[in-house]
Structure formats: C-alpha cells, structure tokens
Image (cartoon, rainbow, N blue to C red; front, top):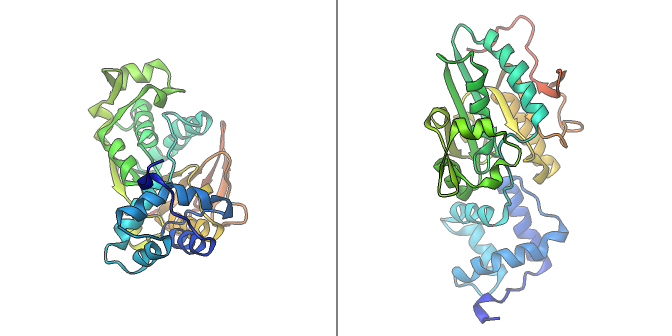
Amino acid sequence: MFESEELIHLPEDVFRLIRDLIRDYSGIYFDDESRYLLEKRLSRRVRNHHFSSFRDYFRHLLYDRNRDEELASIIDILTVNETYFFREQSQLETFSEEILTELRDINKDKKRLRIWSAGCSTGEEPYTIAMLVIENGNFCDWDIEILGSDINQRVLQVARSGIYRKNSFRTTVPYFIDKYFKEEDSLFRISHSVKQHVNFSYLNLLDPFKVKLIGKMDVIFCRNVLIYFDQQSRKKVIEIFHERLMDGGYFLLGHAESLINLSTAFTLRHFKHDMVYQKPIKKGVHRDV
C-alpha cells in the first residue's frame, strides 16, 4: 500500500469528539463500533488538509472559518444513500388512494398541494410522489409543490439530474417507466411532466431557522432517515416536522419506525392499506391557508 493510502490512526478520545460533533451538526450518530469506519473514510480528508493527525483535524472542524463546508463534506463521505422508486408499496397506496383524496377535499378552494420528502437521497422518493399525484388525476389545474431535501450534496446532484440506472426500478412496474422516463444509453431520464413539480434543496433537519423558510406542508415523508439519528436529535426533528405541518397534515415514517417514546403530538390513523401519523386539527381553529 502506498503511504498516501495508509490510514491515519484515530484515537478513541478523538473519535468520540468527532462523533459528537457530527451528531450535534447533523443528528447522525455513530456508535462505538464505528470508529474504524470513520478512520477509514476520513483519513484521506485529514491528509487533504495536510494534517498529520485526527486531533489537528478536529481542531480544524472546530475553529476554521470554513468548518460548515468541511462538515458537509464529511456527511457526503459517511452517509450511505440506498433508495429506489416506489419503495414501501402499501404506504404509497394509502397516500395515493386515501390521503390524496382527503387533501383534494380539504384544499379544493386554494387548489394547492405541498409535500416534503425529507432525506430524499438521490430523488427517487419525491419523483415517485409526483408521479402518484399526476396519476391520481384530480390535481391537473393545481399548484403542486414537492420539495426534496437532503444533507448530502452529492446525492442532490443526482436528484437534480433526474437520470437513473436500472437498479432504481427494482419494484417499478413497466407502465411508469414507459410513461415517465426516456431511455438513453441504458440510463433513464425522468420526464419534464414529473420534474416540473419537484424542487431539491440542501437542508440540515437540525437547522430550525432554515427549515422554517420552507413554509407549511400538507404531507411530510421522512422514511428510514431518523434511524441514523440519536434519540435527542429524533425528538428535535419530529418537533420541527410537527411545526411545519398544516393542521390535519400527514407524517409518513418508514415501516420499521414509530413515534413511540418520541412524541405524542400525532394521531395514528388506520387506513385501508397502512397506518399513518396525522397532526390533529385543533377544535375551533380553521386549517391554515
């Protein structure tokens, strides 16, 4: 192995300092078993800044004027983003067949629909949501806004391009591929009819000031994201989601997730295909416009 490829030793105390800094910045938590992972993936970053130790690199993360940019780069390196179109079918059926029907009736006067895919990765989820809204057929003349956000800049570049490989379609029926994608040299480009409804943004879910700028939402998808957070960060993010939802808005977690021991602010709604959390409507208060 060349010297430039050798790992720089990450002492346990410095690992804990960097681990806690990453958690405070992003909510993503690495347990004690992850020390070698950080050592392996960040050694090159340490050398790129011409440091000889992780201790010097940690000081850089604390005090350098570009520390936020460096922390964002760390998140790009450390996070794994595995997703695909039409993930968790039963929940999507609930969204398409039942939640959208309710939202159509609730928002029929203003004809506006706002949906947030938090932790959208490479964009398959928000584009799936857009296709389902289009297929519903009741929102043709509506103002449809779907926001995809992530803390990883690299995956957002893929999402904005709207170009995907075959492995993104492992559960997608041919109908959607034929209708909404154009094949180009074994790659698949999403159509403008879908893309026009989706915007992507770099967003740290633990930044309440920037999150507030996105406004109120009818639906928030945050599936298989909070599993990487520690308990305290999960609670903070869920409070932020509650604030960003319209009264009566819907909050969709992954199938392996729940709000048990995290929040009592939501009602668990039982639909035909799945169960979904909903923000209660306060008595005597009209839904936000």
